[in-house]
Length: 387
Image (cartoon, rainbow, N blue to C red; front, side, top):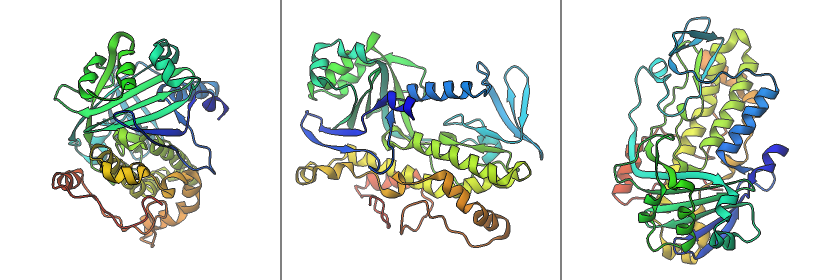
């Protein structure tokens, strides 16, 4: 945690209207629990170094072509012709996972959101070398903010070492679902005409004008994350993809990791096939509801009722609740493993309690939500989503 805090971004989130009018600031997470906001790159680097320090062997430069399983093992086929097996294989390879053929028998069909995301990061000192940006931030070296405008929203994050920005905008058909394709960052300027000057200054400060423009595509929640034999299990976006506006994708992936380890510990080597399926059952409803929160947040940002915001500025930030912020996935897995296993193996009654209170969960599809949006209908659900 000390290493993580050293590269953290402020947990106070500043909300602005696109013209620069400040709406309010709000602290993310719960005041009673440690809450960290950090750039993805720096967090990955911390995890990688920590794993190596603890003797975990990491092999890079290999392409996984396919996943498979036998009654005793899970496995992967590599592009160089080798096959690698283990008691259990975790498919944490993101959207469009190559484990889909084995687990679901088919590839998923994503649905275009109609939006894309410019995103980039670079050293903080580079951003602050621009006098106007330096003046805007003053002596602050930790910052998280969101400018909200018609059909778009602009994010800025700063730690002592790294500065990042992202612009969610309407897709003109040129974006692709790839973090490696580099585009001209100045192309983002056409989506923020008339916006706050700091937005323009930040975009123009991008080194080499290089950014990615990621096509945002929705994927339906799917209840099956585990192969039939239980030896291959999906984790993170491969199991439940989140769009960046949700703000919970990385958190849910970390929760998956804690839950899966606890279930495997409870099940032991002989109980791997049951343990992975218990993990799946404990997690699915929670992640599906978190995915829906992300969709609702996007709708709030892109179809803002400014008259309502004028009377109650915090109405625009209604995208979290205690059920999301205050949860220990490891403890939950240990406490509920036996009851959930009895439910899966012997049809004993079991109900998850790690999701929206008083909500009657029903499997939903992205198309249903898009159709409601097209008709101008709000997405209303029973339960205490935001308390």
